[in-house]
Length: 426
Image 1 (cartoon, one colour):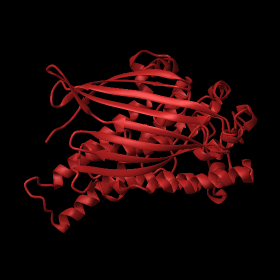
Image 2: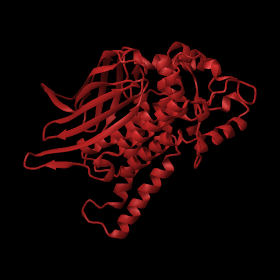
Image 3: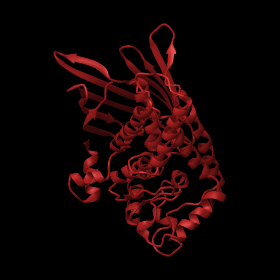
Image 4: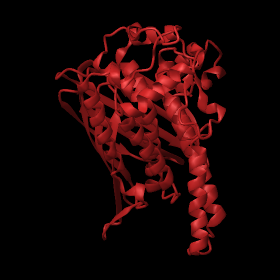
């Protein structure tokens, strides 16, 4: 349960409480995908790995790696996994503004080069951009935001909970796919003919994607936040809005900016965990560490962060430095998170995970401003250890106006989540 997001989901589908889950929140879809990958990778490990023996023949290890690789590749095209998560993150932002849609990943588009978020009305997109240009801009890049958060979540779980699950192929698939997608969008010889092909083969409005190539649309609207959506013109087939942006619709300055963001995406490869180094021991202190770098595209430009994981015998910490950047300058922020602090009250046992981000972001999420606005975000997840396997969880968060990865709200917001965490113990 995700409140108040679920009320937006109900209004979007014009249905009941249960119909709202057709449009899951960012947190719901992320947790669902992470759970599926944990289950698949744990199952494969149990199939190949004999706990009584820590060794494995090279032949068995080869088949083990081929199985993980093959599973991750095929599951990319399956509902619930990272391709599906990508599209659901787009849809979560749309749902906030009551724009209904359908995730074509639910049709099992195996080996398709492009998958749409379809059944979107032009009228809804016109209204959406008028109501909130910043959220409209964020919508276009929310897909890879979800993929990078999936990698981050699985890295943290592997590190702090010592799962030792074979997520590395998934890390590489998601990260390299996202990097190549951003870079491809600044290559006219690739995306412009493909855009023309989409337009010619999508006569019905409902079968068209909501945006076309994500990062061309993101760049276009980032530089034109006040332009009415109808200015895109009429679709080449004569019906509806010409939604898809081509490189020829961008100026050289805009295309150069997109090209730069594609290069900066390689920062997401800076993580020992991607290459199988699950933890780094700090000698004689009983402390382990790891780190990662992220480059997210945002409603105002980008967020480059350096993240440090620290695990001791009793406590788990995450420290991060954020550099939020628009076109004119950068804005600093710091993040601190404690994971699963054990709190005992009489005979009741709890796991408490507070998180805080504080610093500055561009005022009003603007791309072309050097003015800053103070930004803060706080959340706390509290789990009650009912049994060794089941932990009811409540999560509350509050934030000022600003962007947070994995949070649908750019405006100030107070949210509550309720759920149940299932954990397997050896």
